[in-house]
Length: 69
Image (tube, rainbow, N blue to C red; front, side, top):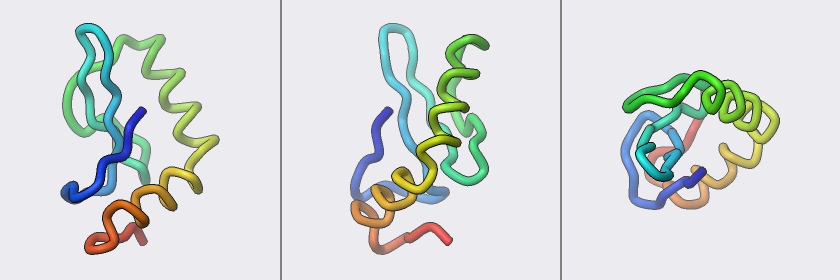
């Protein structure tokens, strides 16, 4: 999972891998673009919820012009 700098709203992270390229919202944790297999989505969703504070902090550090709420 990747949070990038100089990105766009809404706050999100990228999930990339072989044949996978999806954007997942930070709050709420939803698939914004792309697709994930259901078993991977369950894992990503659980990880994002468990690491929500770190995702928000990373987003706000890398994208200070568009902070999360």
